[in-house]
Length: 328
Image (cartoon, rainbow, N blue to C red):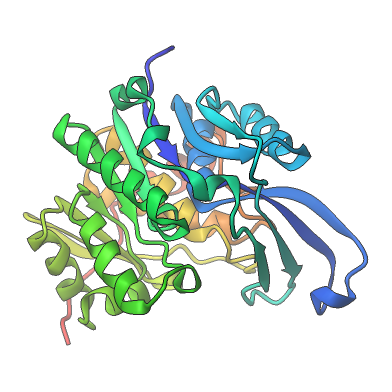
């Protein structure tokens, strides 16, 4: 196995996207894609030239084959994706919107193959990866998948590997909001870089101000925190530095799904290339802004040549646009 830069894990589903606007009940035609926050990040990092391994389970069915084939075409190592003969590949239906509103999504994932991930799914060879990216979705799928998340993050942290964590809250998958908050914060305490959205951070910590949210996770053991502020950009804080980085203006928002995954791609790629945290946030904001201008969860994620032309020449040569910190 070639050296692994990044290990990502979770559930990738088949996704049927409506070809017309309106209630999903009235849509006659869909086109097939894949969906999954964890695999969106894996795809984005692969497009930037990183060697990415994917750990998951899919059903022994046509949708499972479609998921694996699609990820392989993106250059992702799927050799450790288990084929489950007893449980199906999950899928979802996604509405079409043309006004920038969040699309409606209906999930069909209960009892899916990925929900049967467990600590026994961990392949020791994968723990040699330089970096682990984790989200709050796998631990919401089942108790065994939650155990696997804790095991992976703990072992990678103990091995001295860097770990990033995006809460990616899915309240409907948890038994209660309190359980979600408790378990997600326990996982965040195992990460080096924590990447919540502002509303997520407020719910998880009980604090309103981005600086206080970030301080909460720094006190839990994180090295750095970046809080997504939507079109306003992001706030970041480390033990040595903090600030706001302005968002990248876009002419038209087409599809907001996947913007946070694009942000994670920017953060992880830049930090693994030893950029400063402020410059990593700048790249993250740009990739997130690019994602919302494309229809689809990961279609807007750039390749390395595209980033070199569009980002590095247009933005990276300028100082990171920061705004003086103002606490409320």
